[in-house]
Amino acid sequence: MEETTGPAAGEPEVTQRVEGGVARLSLAGELTETARRPLVRVVTELLLHQPAPTRVELDVSATTFMNSAGTAVLVQLQRLTAPRGIDVVLVHPTPAVVRPLQLSGLWHRFPIEGAATGS
Image (cartoon, rainbow, N blue to C red):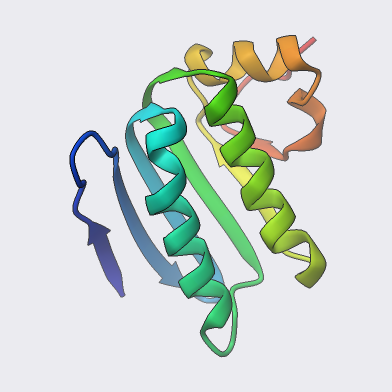
């Protein structure tokens, strides 16, 4: 099943697909405060489904910018899923995502796929 959350004014586009217990989300646009609503909405809906996914993969390869509010959104997603033992995995993070995570010390908090390991 694939769904796209149409962006409201200024919101980035979030696409989701669930396959074999893995929820694959894609974020196109900026990862800022405006991304909070669509991402939290999608993850909350996924957690309410039975069975809930065992893993959430967030493809951020089309993310062009992330600020501290975007970092807070990622931490919030992790806090939503952690009590259920679900990892939020960042897939193909761009330098716009990697650098703020490295500078904030959160780089090692998230499983990463498709990128060189950070320092």
